[in-house]
Length: 273
Image (cartoon, rainbow, N blue to C red; front, side):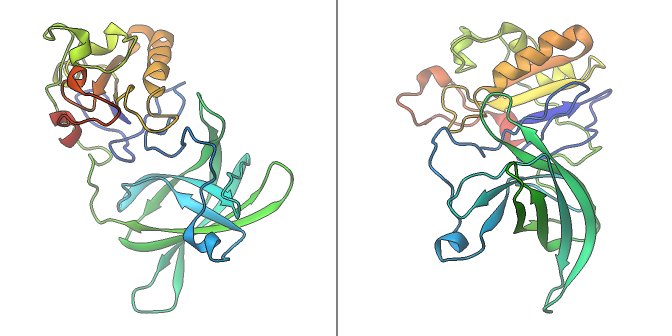
């Protein structure tokens, strides 16, 4: 996942488990595990029981009052993704204790392709003023011209569990190549880009440059997107040069001690800060 800190360590905007990044020409990448390496379809419980023809799946896990960026996918009854260039989204607040809903926003969600895998998600910016249960109505035209309607619900928290938009970025002290006995002790990447381990987060925040931080575990990722994103960050770094600083934080301590495919070591402190 991504954090963007700019200037004196403020987050202009944030998203998802930790955040997603959008920095000038940077391509939006989802770190939350949405796309699986398996080609097996994803089928919701409603579809299994003969529910709607199409369903929307909310991917964003941390949404709160104020500005939010929501990512969602649309699947058909067979559990296969339904792409489209964009979709029109109605966002409704479900009034507590009443069989009623109130339209809060009507927005356009654009389709964002995965940079390293087939498929993608829809992304939209929301600005909601009250916490509670919400429902979205999604209308889109699929690639083959089919008119698609899908719904999904989500809970909007009063306060985010990750750093809020505009709040100071946590000045976490993170591992660097200089203090590591071996680079394999701080990253599970098989071909690590040493530039991503040059600075600790707390040091980078003092450099008065935009900062991109990717929290990922390349060797133990369970999706088709969270591992390759470290390589994508390197590509962005090469494109922007010294206009920004870039850091990869391995999710697990001492990745070189992990045996098998399931991590057994502790999470690094920065993941929880």
